Image 1 (tube, rainbow, N blue to C red):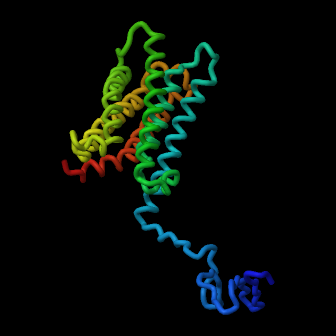
Image 2 (image 1 turned 120 degrees about the vertical axis):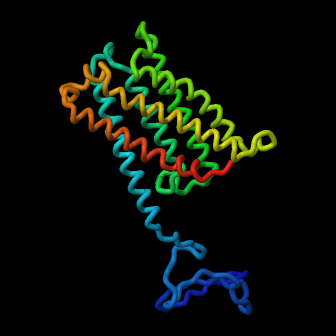
Image 3 (image 1 turned 60 degrees about the vertical axis):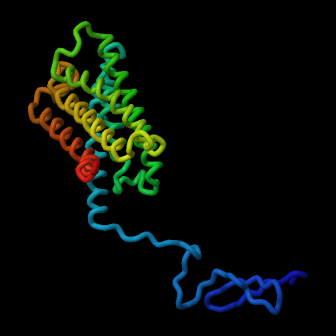
Length: 264
């Protein structure tokens, strides 16, 4: 008992505590549980809607894609980093981490089945996508520059030519991505839908060239020299190439879907 009020404890099956300011007033708002109402942790807690079949399928596909990306990334990094320090092909390590790992993850930032960004709003997903793509571009370009510094003859293979094309289109994609990030501020000059569609196109071209370069990297002398006896087996090389194609398909179906249904 206090001067301003008192606590009243009702000893019933479902106990509740009520603070009464005046003996003549009833509490205006209280959170209580009765035998007919299920107990909840909060008064205004919202029960999330059940996942649809499409969302469950997208979650499974995203999980499979991450497993495949992890397999190729871990194998190529182990293949390279197990060598002596002076023989480590940093080009392969950095390009794999930048183009295959981070850029693929950046494309999946918008996916509903992505558990990392499921609670994020659209602007937060856009910033995360741009950060992942920027970090992947910096790491991948660093690997290309290292390769150019170590060799006298550059871009004489299909893998190298595709890598050069990736490097050129990548700068255009980053600039268009910056414009897409600030599409609302630039709407007086360019329509946001046009801006984002152009970035979608340039981004898909960049990622396609990068994955094609990754695909033909399994035919290079570097892979044959450093991948142990596994490189002598055609089946293993074919397996890595098929996995690369699957990663490309699972990472780009979202942007392709948006591009197909966008109207300029």
